[in-house]
Image: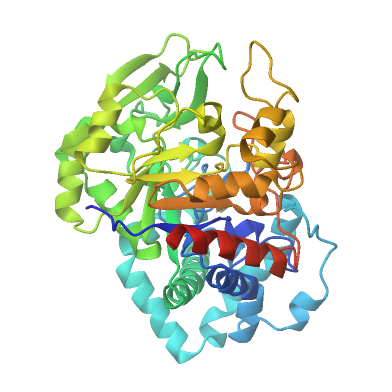
Amino acid sequence: MKLSVEKRSGVLLHPTSLPGGHGIGDLGPESYKFIDHLSDMGQSLWQVLPLGPTDQFNSPYSSISTFAGNHLLISLDLLVEANLLKASAIKTKPSLNSNRVNFKDVIAYKAPLLKQVSKDFNTKASTDMRNRFEDFKDNNSYWLDGYSLFCANKEANQHRPWMKWKEKNLGLKECIDQAMVLQFLFHDQWQSLHRYCKGKGVQVIGDMPIYVDHDSSDVYSNRHLFNLDENGRMIYQSGAPPCDFQKNGQLWGTPVYNWDKHEEEQYKWWIQRFKKLFQMVDIIRLDHFIGYAKFYRILTKNKTAVNGEWLRGPGTNFFDTVLKAIKTFNVIVEDLGDVTQDVIELRDRYRFPGMKVFQFEADSMQHSKDCDSNSFFCTGTHDNDTIMGWFKSLPKQRSDHNELSQDSLLNFFNCNKENVHWKMINYTLRKSSKFVVVPMQDLFAEDSRARFNVPGTLSNHNWSWRMKPNQLTDSIKNKLEDLTKNIRN
């Protein structure tokens, strides 16, 4: 349960942000090159966001399955290598943005190719690959069968939410088989990449959102585990109460759990969920850890979160049960925000490392003590501005109302604007936290235009940033390597 005390550092980069010629980062050659870069820089952690298939808003945190993989990450180049796709099929392609993911264009380009590959799989796949496919189906039937049926029904019902379907469980075999093939291809490519990471001494930090989408195979196949009415509609939705930043609170649009039912079933669904993700990654980041101690629910008829209510979460009963079933439980918990004592006590009871973010800690840099070694420190998260975007948003000089300013940071670090990002990265690396991670955008000193997500917005700008080919120069690599060496000497 307790993680190694060895200090480790790495980079946050979701696979969609990798460079490449197909409009979106994938699990192909550029991902292997990135792992080589990590190793060259002395880094041993690769943090990714949730890897599941996304909904129409393209957020990794809004998925149609917590078990499945995002088929848009399947590498077309590796399909060509496996003789599942002709090289000529990907030579002529539409003009795709190389600096950002245009999900609409990518789907229009990749989906027909992937569908054809799944149709031709039995005739084109090697004997060894077909055998791996059969093993994959056997080992993953507990989620794969329901997910594939969900996808087939979704297509048969013009992609409407499952609550509005006219069930069509007959005549769907071809679509079900295709969904299974795509899941196999994703997982086969991911497992190969994960093995490569291990060979390079790189551990993968995955991500588990606490909630799942209402319009997902998870809810569709396990309705009794969620607070739904007899027609499958949400009775309550999850969210957050009003705060200084959002006076009406937040409505998340995801169903809350029927925790009594989960307890009755000894948290079987959760244990399956954890075991599946631990097969794919080495460490799991538990998003919204507060929800395991207590959760906020709002009646679905309410237009704001003002009149929601707090209820006790599954707490120690949940983790005691899960830890009995999963002996090696390497997690990091996202305990940011208005964290109360009950959340801290739950975290500390199991010695789970909590999170620290430079942008939240900078205000008290000159006065703060070093942090607990049992923690995860980062310059920013996927929801933060980049550190240079954040720096440029600060007032240039201190005022009576704000101690933190551009000048105060430059004075503290004794540097100029051109290298302040390296000073902030170095400060983060030198904290006592056993885990330190820097988003790739911060290594590049990118400004707010490279921000990965702005919470509470549905902009096409969100989730779309990509690193440019050859943007990770030898100079940047050598600088990070030198800084990393210094914290270990």
